[in-house]
Length: 503
Ligand code: BES
Ligand code: MN
Ligand code: ZN
Picture 1 (cartoon, protein in one colour):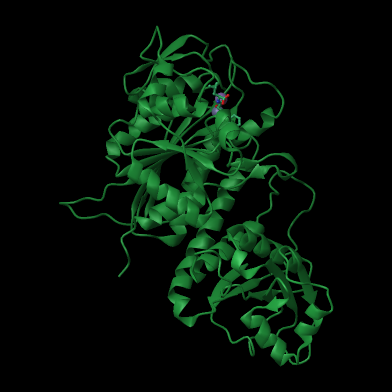
Picture 2 (tube, rainbow, N blue to C red):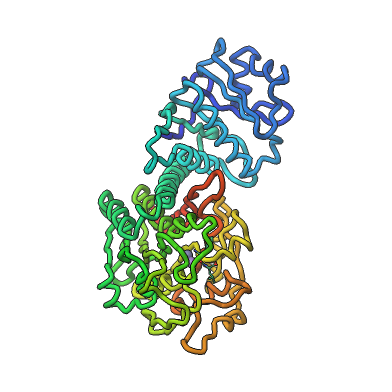
């Protein structure tokens, strides 16, 4: 499906379906009023008939009408105009897409640009609509033999830009929304694939595929031997319990180089890539254990973000690191009480083998030091405690640099991919004391998300660092079980904000 932005004249623009907002108390948008005039008040009559009064969540598809250049009109209820918020807008776009699937429309034009959403400008509407339309066209089919191929009705969507002066901004918003949606769909697909298919080697080959199509992207994959040479004893201690060989994936996107005197320091993203987390010897209860195939969603979000970068080609330098293995119980697996030596030289007492994410991340974070990054962000389905604290709506955020976290907070708001900061006070560090090693890998029952971040903070002291705990936001459970593609929108927006502007 092709998505475009255009400033159209609704009185002449031919389309299979014009999507028109209606506000509460049967108020048509400006575009709607223009159509109504052309159709001699036919839209107004539909509204007055009582079929639709503009409340949130309502929709009504009208067939061809005398005098109109569009073959159909889809009226969308947006509620009270001054109360229109981000969520209401997004729900309306998704609803429109769903209704359109059931019509014969091969193309559609959305007149949603003029709807003012909170404090956002028109480009926000374009970005969101493009992203949502991309997400809506994703369907998981990889391991199903029943035919669920989308009906492929819609071939082309035009997002009307109400104010002509907004066109340049709207084009950028479309590009970002489109690329972000594609990146999220890649992250969703990798997350949704079962653990027996989406192995560490599979992630590595997906990373290689990404780089193949992109001149400015390089991939390097380290195997167990190479990791041994680097001294990644903590990561390898987790990998040992599995038949699947571990992989350490290094992606590098160089859209800009800086100068010799002042080379550009990269942003480094580190994504947890546990392709299945059984808990290891500290084995998990079997209820919902299947969802631990999603324990590589941090890694998937890094690949998804690189997918977006490949499409957008911003002038920026980004490195992606993905430590990847399975966490399984086995004769060779970590045992509670084992002491392992990390790449940093710090020793770790593995008191619980199910706290494995931090064991692979710490070595990746130490590896990140060699890039002297301007910022390092790790993304991980790290703690069940984060789901208890924040639920499924906000990603947990902790780190050692308030400025970086403040930026991420703001970009989260703007993209709707929100984060919420938790404290990383010194007092919590005491919970990680060990009698037999430099540090323990768990900090007791209290403040599980914070002590996990405390653990990581021991390996990021030399860098500006933020940690995103996506345990609650990376996938939906229940009927809609499936990966969400978060936080690709947040990461992509953050990186774009650091790009050198094209002249
Ligand atoms: N991958 C899990 C975290 C997780 C659990 C995410 C459930 C989403 C839903 C992680 O490896 C883990 O098992 N963490 C433990 C840490 C504990 C042993 C300190 C947890 O959260 O129970
Ligand atoms: Mn675990
Ligand atoms: Zn895990």
